[in-house]
Amino acid sequence: MHIALLGYGKMGKAIEQLARQDGDEIVLRADSDTSRKAAADFLQAADVAIEFSRPESAFDNIRLSLEAGVPVVCGTTAWLGRLEEAKALCAKHQGALLYASNFSIGVNLFFALNRYLATLMAKQPNYAVGMEEIHHTRKLDAPSGTAITLAEDILKLTPGLDKWANGEAGSSRELPILSKREGEVPGIHEVRYNSAADSITIRHEAHSREGFARGALLAARWIVGKQGYFEMKDILGF
Image (cartoon, rainbow, N blue to C red; front, side, top):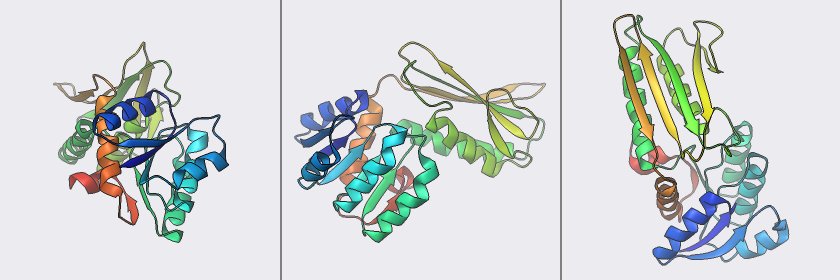
């Protein structure tokens, strides 16, 4: 498989290392210094693009890939205000786009577990739900995209909750998300239900970036030859 890496930071390098072990070829390593024309030229040789850049660059990278007829897998977060535009571009060019706030297989299992637990807890009004996420100090967005995915799934399933709050909740109708930035932590996400009698907690802890990189490569192989907008649940059958 010929892969274009749109974003060549720590995640891009982790994906490259695993891809080369699998016999794949990296035909483009685009960072902030790569011109749009150069990226467009090299994209012509790619079977798929994997986009892990910055929030302000993600949409343009997706557009560039779709205009080049290259399916794109995107893991950049904090740009989703333009997701509907990206879906429209995908339809216009009869292309393929797969977005995930987290490509780790374990995290996507955690998403499914979170939805199931939220369904059960919706019938238990004596419990209050809260979340915590911890990442390395270089992570730009807070809460993390993964935390927002978890929170939005809980909101859909929990009567009496209207929105999530970045920090302490301002009312009983808000779901609080406490974000911490510490050292080199790859990612920890915790959902906790508290009552006067007890607490119920589910937690996912990443040990390295390898799980994210392997999931992104799985998505890249899966999307080749497809058309439309997809998410990890389409790959995993959730």
